[in-house]
Figure 1 (cartoon, rainbow, N blue to C red):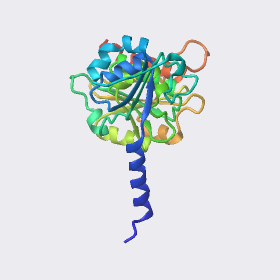
Figure 2 (cartoon, one colour):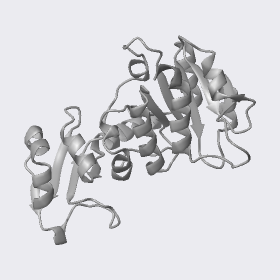
Figure 3 (cartoon, rainbow, N blue to C red):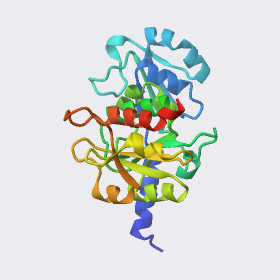
Figure 4 (cartoon, rainbow, N blue to C red):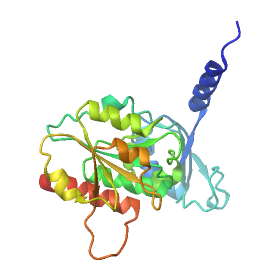
Length: 261
């Protein structure tokens, strides 16, 4: 019996995902990936100098590096990549189900970041760093129209990608509704909102909070605005304008966590 087309497509997508690999580069990103027991590591290419600097991490990973001449660095990277003599081929991390990631276990109200069409890997990498610094449980994007796990993202995250859950889910509005169903209050960042994030989150003491940020320019989609619990803005002096989305994420996380720091 011939399989339905949708079954064939689903199986093809699964095979493609299983075959997908990512090349990480740069000393920080490679070191932290080597030290991450959850990361499936496939191939390590380093110069002699980089191998010396990564010696402890390489030993810990039990990998056998390929030592290459700096002038013949043969990892399949973009020519503009600042690899610092180190590149590591890996499988993307699997952080598991949404429900397992967003339930905190340290007694404090959890915080998460959700991204609506933020596609720049450098912005997402910077957001992962801020999320780790301010104790957010996860950064959540979408399968389409969000930055995938790449070497550029990992390098900007400076190791945070190995420790900070980054989930890409099919539908943002449905994800928001799932979070609301398990007790999250979801705030959407919008420069035209009436209430500030400091005031809105200050009213919530014990509930988990999700902060949704949109792409620079378009901002949040209408469907996202209709799904969140409340739209809030970051306090700004005068009419300066809007922040870069990674800066806005850091400020928003600080504003929502400030009473706990």
